[in-house]
Image (cartoon, rainbow, N blue to C red; front, top):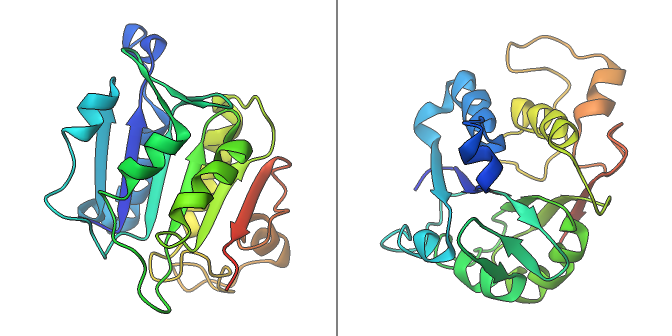
Length: 202
């Protein structure tokens, strides 16, 4: 498995409208950074379809697990069914192994009610993830989520998924203080009002 795992829990309006999904766009961003071989993109319209795409064994390599879907306070809805956050947490354990000492991995949850979902997921997943990114706003739209995630994946380093933004960008150019402040997602308040980061307690 690659360093980036994108789990796309698509809905009927995305299928009917032939729309690009959030994970489609993130895949493009990460690939255009020269990491096209480091992205796995799983698409599911039913929970069973997600289960059928499990890897042969959980991966140690993955640093980012990005889940995009339509959530509520109880779970996430798909076209054919829905799954509770508790069940979904157990399913995620099939994709990545528990963290070894000093290893970092983040879960990026992009859906409505994601803050409440993270509180539920953490009860089962703190041994698998060192940090979580989510939205504090209960209802969140596509335009706001893709703006935040575009900046996130444009800059984040798979070796340091919870790390602060380096002063130089990938081209070796110095970044302004304002730019660094905007895209340093190790700090919860990054200019996207409802975008939050949470690091697991040591």
